[in-house]
Each structure stands twice: as structure tokens, then as C-alpha cells.
Amino acid sequence: MLALRLMRGGRPYVQIRRLLVSVASAGTGFLLLCALGHALQGGPGRGVRLAWCLVPLVATVYVAVAVARTDPALRPDRSGLAAFGLEGAGLRVFTGVATAAFCGLGSVVALIAFLFARGNLVGRPLGDGTAKALGATATYALPLAGVITLLAVVPVVASVAATFAAPVGARGRRAEDGRTPKAPAPPATPPAGLPWGVALLTAGIAVQTYAGRGAERRGTAWLDGTGSSLAGVLTGWALAALGLAVAGPGLTYLCGRALQSARPGAVRLLAGRGLQEEARRIGRPAGVVCAVAAALLSAVRLGGTVPSRQGDAAPGLLTLFGVTLVAACAGAALLLAAVESRQARHETTATLQRAGAPAATLRAAVAMRAGALLVMLAPLAWLVAVLTTLPLVG
Image 1 (cartoon, one colour):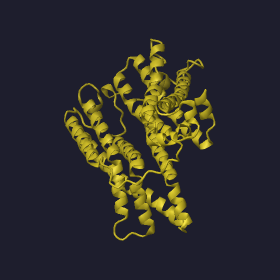
Image 2 (image 1 turned 30 degrees about the horizontal axis):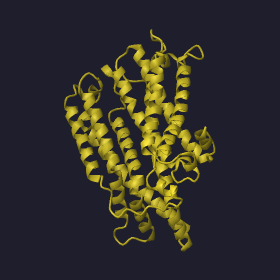
Image 3 (image 1 turned 45 degrees about the horizontal axis):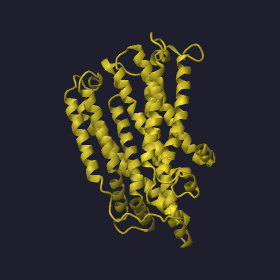
Image 4 (image 1 turned 90 degrees about the horizontal axis):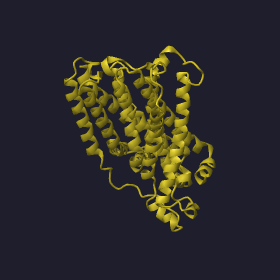
């Protein structure tokens, strides 16, 4: 009940953040149920369809964790929470329960939408193609245990991830002592993940190159799911995406340093220092967005095909829906990081304004930070897409 009251009392923009988690959970749950329906049909590519649902699942969990870390009701320094035992482990459990509630709402919506599209609620499916894609014409009925298990995947995984990612460290201890938490000091050294990110990216490209050599036909042969080519390509893509995410903070820090080179003016200096200070906060989601963009470019280079056994392509609408869901989750995580960064710079911005800094200069610095990240990430995403698909398209 306490969780529901705290969630209900949020401001509209906070409720929108929580609604994003429910929407993402609904989309992922719907895709999981579609994979189950396709499996009931007994068609090819059943395991591949389910495996590709891992990408939306990871994206949904990523957004859920980002919302949990920025939710005002879940902050460890919020006054009054300690009186209810919400400190330390208690706050972690509360964060996990709240995240599970958001995702559970999305799972319910996914079930209703799935049953409605199959015709279980209205008596007839939305169309012949939809009936076949969702398994409405299958001989076997929907297994209740399978439906419940798939719908519980997102809430369980997201709640566990949010529980361990809850920010209950030093800030929580300072809040327990009754002292006002201070803003963290700017990083004195660049993030240390850039070499590891480059190594993971290189390993991913190498794995894909090796897997591409074993494909029987270029472009679509690796999608048959019968040998090791598919597993190698997916593993390579996963390593490349992880490498971009790990290298994101280091790349953001270097981007900020580049802005301050060659006798910078006030705008470039503010923009560069801001990127360096916020490299750890916005660098990782920026790297994730770069990875998603690279994956989309890779799909375009491969002709937009989707893996399934014996070259049987998945329905186009479900493919587009899954791609849109993953891209939206990545963009939402980056936007949440930007909002968190703006909140962290509130005192600095107020000090500059009191010192007489023009508002136009501050806005120009923000625009320059965004533009610098775009200039850095766009060519990187294109380069990664070209390198990862080169063994497949020649």
C-alpha cells in the first residue's frame, strides 16, 4: 500500500516516466506471446523467434532500471522514508517491488492485446495473417503455464535488476544521518572503460567475420538457424553492442576534451567541461543508442531480413514493432540520463546565472554538447554497421 501511495502521488512528468516502463513491458510481453503462438503452429524458426525477444527484453529492463534510478519516490535521500524502514536493503526491496508493479501492469495489457488480436475476446482474429502469426489457427490451445511464465519474465528480471541498481550507497547513509547530501565532485580522470569497450567491439567484429565465412549463401543463408552461423552472428552483434556501451563514457569524455582544444571560447569551454563531468552518466546510454543505430543500419544493409529457420521471414509488422520498441527504449534511456544530468547541474547553472552568464550562452552550450555527441556517434554507428555486415553481404 505504501508503494502505491508513493507512486500515485508523483507529478505528471514522473508518471509519464513510469508509464514508459509499463508500455515497454507490454510490448516485450506481446512479442513473447507472439513467439509462443508461432511455436504452437509448429512452423520453422520457433527457437529463433524466442531468442530474438531477448533484445526487447534487455531494452525494457534497461529502461526500467533508468526510471528506478531517477524516480523521486525511490531516492535514498528522500526525507521520511527511513521512518517506514525504507533504508538500505529495505529501499532496494521497495524499488524492486515498485518496478515489478509497473512491469506487471504492462504484462496485463500485453495479454489483453494478444488475446484480442487472436480473436479469443471478440470471436475472430484481426486478419488471416494475424491469426497465423499469433497461432490462432494452431491445433493446440494456449498453455496457461506457458503464458504465465512468459508474462512473468519481464517483471521478475526488471525488478531484480532495479533492486541491485538502486542508488542506496553513500547518499543513503548521509540521508540517514540527517545531513544534506552534497553534489558529487567532477571526475578527475577519464572513465577507464574505453580500452575494454574497444576490445569487446573488436572481438564482436572478429566473431561475426568468422561466422560469416561459414554461411552457405550471402545475405540470408546465416538466417537459417540450422548451424553455427546464426549463433556466431548474434554473439558478434552482442559483443559489439556491449563494447559500444562500455566505451560510451570514455568516448564522451574525449569528446568533451576535444571541444576544449584550440583556445576555446565560453560556449565551447562550458560544453566541454559539461561533457567531461557527465561522461559517466550520459556516456553509457549514448553508447547504447549508438549500438541500436548500428544494428538498424546493419539490418538495412542486410535487406531488412529477420532470422528464422529455412529463410521463413517473420511478419513485417511484428518485425517493425520490435525494432521500434528497442529504438524507443534506447532513446528513452538517453533522455532520462539527460534529465538526470540537468538536475545534477542545477546548482552550477544557478551559480552561473547569478554571476551574470546570459541564458543564451547556457542554451548554446547545451546544444553544442548534443551536437558534439551526434557528430561523434553517427559516423561510429555507420562504421560499426559496415564492419559487422561486411562478412555477410560481401
